[in-house]
Structures are given as structure tokens and as C-alpha cells.
Amino acid sequence: MEEKTKISEIIKIEYLTPSDAEFSENGGMITMKLTKDGETKDVGRVFLHRCFPHETEDGFISVLDRDGNELGLIRDAGDFGEEVKALIERELGRRYRVFIIKKIKSVNEKYGYSYWKAEDESGELEFTVQDTYRSITKIDDDRIYISDIDGNRYEIPSLSALDRKSFKRIELFL
Image 1 (tube, rainbow, N blue to C red):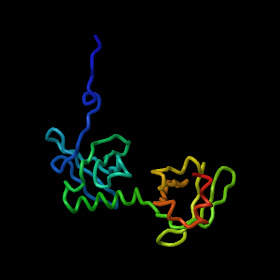
Image 2 (cartoon, helix red, strand yellow):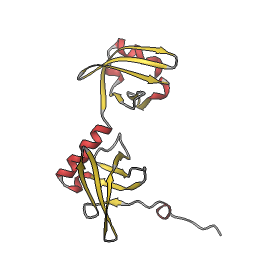
Image 3 (cartoon, rainbow, N blue to C red):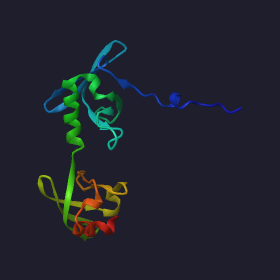
Image 4 (tube, rainbow, N blue to C red):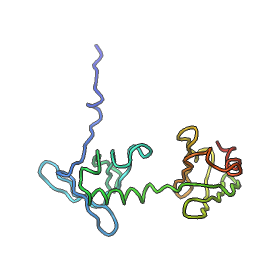
């Protein structure tokens, strides 16, 4: 007889709460003290990653130590109070900043790289993309993300809202 295993027995999710995780800022970095079994440990610098970056901004945030080990998940940043929520949002804002492209001025390909000139709400952007086809992610039929060689992210929230020339410049990559 085959033994059945529940997924909850295989995967153990540790949710962090204000009673067991204390976040603070130290030298521009986010740090954490973690209390487990009555003992508090200063974990030091931690790194935050959204589990669902396109769907939810304040919830399901993975907290990792310097070695990339997951310490736990923040179910909702609002549970930690306004000051800590602002700290978490600021840290995630740095990590997940997305430039919103309004217009594409040029895309030139050379030796597996494409060199982009575009405009966002702040002005002109220039960035380089390696393996252009793989660096463009379709979120839905009208929305795309582009990742450059430095890890920066760019979004075109509506391909249909681009002017005709801009769309023609990237149509080949879609």
C-alpha cells in the first residue's frame, strides 16, 4: 500500500510575526532580530524578496539571511506597524524599482545585445539587454517586462498605448 504524504508535511512555512521578528535599519540596510523558542538571535542584515512580485506588494515577502537561507515569510507587512512597514516598503522599492516606458526611441542589435533608448516619466533612458527574446517577459497580451544586463526592470504596461513607431521598434521581439 502506497503511503500518502501531505504537502504541508514536506514544506514547512515559517511565518514571521511582530512577536518573533524585530526589523530595524542599520547603516542603510535592513536588519532583523529573530526570537525562537524563547531565545533572541541578532540575524544581522536580511534580504527581502516578494514571492509574487506582480500580484502583491505588501504580502508574502520572503526574508533571507546573508547566505540566502529563508528565515521566514511576512504574510502582511502591515502587521508590523507603520514604521516597520515603511522600512520594508523602502527596501522593496529599491529592489523592485520598475521604470515605466512611455516611448521607445530606438533598439539596435549587435553581437547578441540590444541597445535601447526609451523614455519614462522622468526622461530619457538608455539600457542594454542581452538575449533580447529571453529578456522580455509577457505578463499578458498587452503588458511586458524587460530585464537589462544590470538587473534593472522596465515595464510597458500597455503595448497598445505605445505610439505606432515605438511599437514597430519592438514588435519583432514580441
